[in-house]
Length: 253
Image 1 (tube, rainbow, N blue to C red):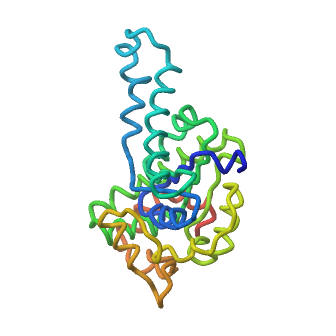
Image 2: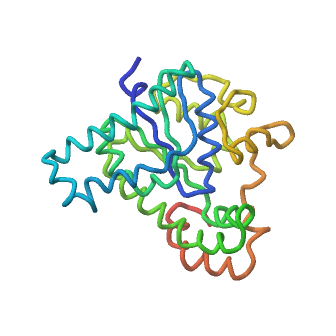
C-alpha cells in the first residue's frame, strides 16, 4: 500500500457544494470508509488556541495536545473503517474548509479534497433546501469558504490538497473520479459510480440522496445552472456583489 493510500482524507467545501455526494461516492470504494459529518474538531482546536492560557497550566506542550486529539479522532475513524472491512478513513465535514491549517497540524500526511461549486448554484441550493434566509446567508458564506480554503491549500504540497469542481463531478463523473482516486493513491473501482447500490450509514438527508436519481443515474447534472431559474433579482444582485470576484477568479461567468 502506498503512503498516500494510508493517509486520512478530508472532504471540505461550502455547504451545498456536493460534499455529501462525494462522501457517498468515496464511501462506495472498497478501501475507503467515510461516515457522517463529525463537526467537532473546531471545538477541540480551542485547546491550543482560545483556551491555551488555561490548558497550558497542566504542563504539557502544544504538540502533546495535538497528538492526543489526533489519536482520539483518528482512532475512532480507524475503528469505524475496520468494522466495515475498509482499510482507510475519510471525513466529510464542510466546515473544516475553515480549519485546514489545524487538519494539517493534526495529520501532517492527510489529503484534503476541496470541492467547489458555482456560488450562484450554492445560493440556489440553500434556498431550495432551507429557505430564503439561508440563501441570504449563503451569499457571503460561499466566497468566504472558498477564499479561506484555497489560501490554506496553497501552502500545502500538491499531493496533499486538491480541488475538484462539482460541475465536472456530475458531467464527467468517471474521468473526474479516476483522476481523484489516482491522486489519492487508490485504484479505480467502478462501484463508486453506483453509490446508491452500496451500503452507507446515513442520516435522513444523506439517505434521501442515496435514493435520488435522474433517468436511473444517481450522479446527475440537472442542478448545474439552477441559479438561472431559481434566483430572484435581489439574490442575483447580492451574489454578484459579494461573490463576483471569486466567481470570476474561478472562471464562473
